[in-house]
Structure formats: structure tokens, C-alpha cells
Amino acid sequence: MKLAARVNQVSTSITLAISAKAKAMKAEGIDVCSFSAGEPDFPTPKHICEAAKTALDQGKTRYGAAVGELKLREAIAKKLQKDNHLNYQAENIIVTNGGKFSLFNLMQTLIEPGDEVIIPAPYWLSYPEMVKLAGGTEVIVNTTAENDYKITPEQLEQAITPQTKLFIFNSPSNPTGIVYTPDEVRALAKVIVEQDILVVSDEIYEKILYDDAEHLSIGSINPEIFARTIVSSGFAKSHSMTGWRVGYAAAPIEIIQAMGKIQSHSTSNVCTFAQYGAIAALESSQECVQEMLTAFAQRRSFMYQAVNAIPQLSCPKPDGAFYLFVDISQTGQKSLEFCQELLATKQVAAIPGIAFGMNDCIRFSYATDLDTIKEGIKRLSEFVAS
Ligand code: GLU
Image 1 (cartoon, rainbow, N blue to C red):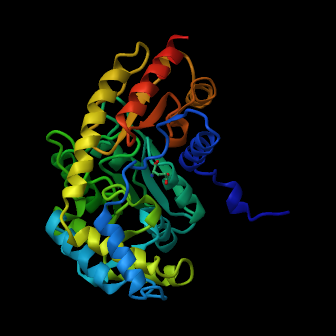
Image 2: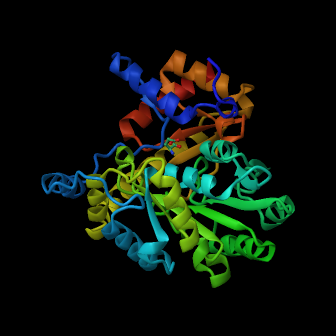
């Protein structure tokens, strides 16, 4: 069978593959400690489920507008105004099949052959693949642990060419958990405006912040950067709604209308009653978000200390999200073999850094319970010592 050439340009999502493998091993009765996908282990808060059930009972089971339910788009616009100081209206919002499809759709909308997209490494593994699938060229800018895996304004400026269309910015970051300070965000915004490129700000982890970390939405800095910004986000991480597939993008109307066109020929609307769950997530108390954050903070403290106590392993302290990006170079192994052997011999699942553009590191998601974390760390230290 001859498949389309574009399929051979990309690889399967390793995060999804390893987490599916860990789940299958568990189903077989194998005692796996999974630190694979970034998927909160909490059930979706009850009031959100109830709202979706009510929507089902009310017959919200039909096609809706491809860009999303107006009520949800209004609620998202209100949230972005209130929390992020971004002056969007409902017409600036598109509801998408998870945050992931907002990014995929955006690439289809903006990128064509010849366009370059700047992506700092380590990066979330789907960014370069989405660029390639749109026919664009990914320009990877390597960052270092010494600089907390942050791209500097100088690095960004140097990477820009006349072909540069878009910069992908993600803070708090997957896979490192680092958060850019407001001053660092302002410095990057200055380059974006001066060089007149676009930025997509992936803010899916904005609610998961520790200690004094602060999230500044890049588009809120001034009207010039606002006009060049597309925000991508969703409910999966903040409200533990990974399987619901409700995300969104916010952008100038022209971009949203174009994304709506693509959506009308691809996914159509996101599951209608799921959108009513998302409305409840935004319009009800945010206490559930805080409760999950308290648990993540406890796990982060434990896991950060425990990993750094293992000789040969080290990682920077994350300020956000729920990942540790651990340097394994002292072990003499590369990330793929390290993760394969760790899973085979100790039944501990982690994601090889090669998937994120750094082969000397591996990623642990600590969106899992403390007992699993303690047991996983014990096995990890035995593995490294062996
Ligand atoms: N974004 C999450 C992760 O990086 C979920 C899996 C995926 O979509 O890649 O683990």
C-alpha cells in the first residue's frame, strides 16, 4: 500500500504510545509505575460531569456551530479578559478538539511550504510534527539547563529569517516545567514585534504554578504584540478533563474565521454536551483547580528532591506544570535505551527526551499519586545503581 508521503515525515506520538503501553501492562496485572503522559490522575470534578449529564438530558446532542457553542466562546472570552488581561470577544474564540487540535488547525491555517516556525528545544513533541504536516519547516533553537531551558531574546532574534512566520512559545513548559518570568516574556515580545512575526502562546499549564511563579500572557503586554498573538489552551490539565477533548484558540478574527473554515471540513464542532461541561468548569468555583494544585505541589517537592538525591541524575526545579526533565548523561545511556530498560526491568514508564529534542534527558510526569511516586523513585534509584 502506498501511503501519502507526509505520513513518513512524522513519527507517532511517543507520549501517547508509552502511556498506552503502561496502561495495557497494568491491565495485564503488571505492577507499573507510570510517569508517562501528562494526565492528571484526579477524576473530573463532579459539578462539571453533572453539567454535561444535564446537557445530555436536555438533548444537547446535535450538531453545533463548527467554531463552538456561543455560550462557551463567551465564557472563554470572559475568562481571558479577567485572568489574562486579553481583550477578546466571543468572535475571537474557536473551541477545538483539545488544545492539540487548536495548534494543528492553526498550523494548517497559517503555514505553507517555505514558511519557517521557530521552536525552542526541548519542546512538546507534537509541535514540529504539526509544522511538518502543514508543509512548513521547523527551526529548532536549542536551550541549555544552565539557562533553565529558556530561549533568550538574542537566540530568538538570531533564528529569525525573512521566511519566519511563527514562534511557538510555551510557558509553563512541557517538558521542563520552567516558567518564564514576566520580564523574560516582555523581552521576547519586543523581538516579536520588532521583527514582525506571529507568536502562538500555548498556555495550557497556566494554572499550574508553584511558589512565587507568575504567568504573564504574552499578548497582554501591549496592542502590538496582542495583534500578533494566538493563544492556545484548554481544560485538560487545569480541570482534569483530558478525555473530554475541549480546547480553544483565541486570536484576531481573521485567523479564527479561517480556522473555523478548516474545522468545518475536519472535526466540525467539539462534542456538544462536553462543551456544556466546559462552561460549568469556567463558570463555577475554581476551588477544584486549587485542590489539584496543592496535591501537585506536594508531589513536586517530594519528587524533585528524591530525583536529585539519586547519584548521576539531576534536574532543574520546575516552577509550573507537572513534569521533571531529568539529565541522565552521567549514566552513560541515551534516553531511548534508558526508558526501554527502565520499563522492561523495573516497570517504570517515563518518556525519552529524544522525543522532545534532547537525548540526554528523560521526562517524568508527576501527575500521579504519591505512593506510586515513592515506589517509582525506589525502583529508579535501584535501576541507576545497577
Ligand atoms: N500533552 C501531554 C503530554 O505531553 C499528553 C499527551 C500528548 O498529547 O502528548 O504528556
